Image (cartoon, helix red, strand yellow):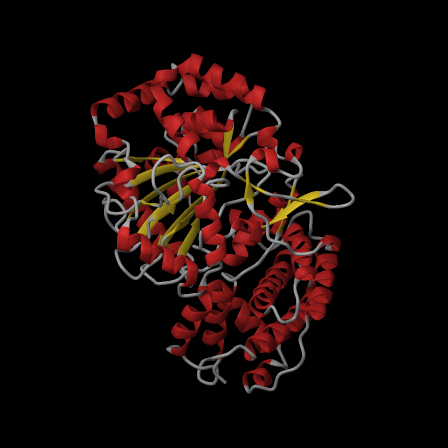
Length: 553
């Protein structure tokens, strides 16, 4: 499959509209919405639903009483301090791995308040589940990287909604920097797909990102077709008095986290919602849930079970609606947060040609120990940056890529200690490490990477420990291990698209392959064959990064 970038288009211009599940069941969606409105009363949440459907997002502030939020915030800060990933661009935590956070009523009020659940279910046209639940701290920094460039989330073939709650780190104040930023009404568009001669339908992650002036201009031009006022419109949710809760169409609304060196550090919790019938993904951590609705969101169920769980939450829904009527500022007016004048010009310039991940890495690592003085520390830092680099993986119309998700996240968000353990173990075994640090490089081609990935794929799929019994350090590792063979299979597809001169992408793919091999050897008991393969990938990775401009020798 040749690598091609695709535009955003209206539904009538899609090459295979029948492959988009959100377009194939409109009558069913409307029937469910009518049932939801009959249960709750359309006026109770109608304004929020209209804002989500027309603008792509709606934000609430002060949804949780300050004292309640403060208790949750203290639990959050303690967990992030003890267990956050402390990565190159942010600190991340899989909330499913955190018993204190899952057991916090504040978390559930923040990301899955019953009113929020109603609005998202109405938008998606069916019962919903949470497929991802994460915490993330971000600090002031000037960078436009894959992590925070203008983008769309997840697959184009289903709709994904997110609830993101943001606040200033260490406080109960709203965000004052690193704010969620979006282009209203771009949710009315779809990512175009590719249709092959055999009628297979697919897309890729490059279609999700807007990393250049041409792509940013394309998004703004398309937005202008839906505006009745002078545009463009860019909403930047920052400088709010209380924590900000935003529901948005993550797979359709063009958005990003606006990273600059100005403002304060930001904390956030995020929940991703799908319809229960859209994918096989399930968090399944219902043991910590306190209500039927929470258990449904984690484990799924029937339409009747979902509606019954909502009936049990009616007092909370009514109370929230009454607060909205009494407190006009509870719903954020996005017009007060538009980027205009110099602020818009600065935002536009950054998105078109801002500080890249390579620039940030080179600057920061120039201040770090060289390989000669601290080779392990240098390599750990380099890997932390490279797993945040460009990795263009495929999306398929049958949604089978959802199987790779847990492994991808686990590898990308490995803590410095986790990476250090891999590096120290593998470097101690490697006969090549010292020579490569001296600049004695060997050849490494995309063909070599593909050969290694094919071998890793074979080892993982034939391992006698594949069915269980591997060495896991918790629920996150266990879920990632189940996901790893699918991730490696799709990484082979990605590597097959690459050319040797696509340095950044090849380095990122090799970094993922190296860490996948190291963890796969541990989880699946791959023995000597796994260790030899990890050594080969380490050699390829070091060869690649040794030729990178600005790399210390």
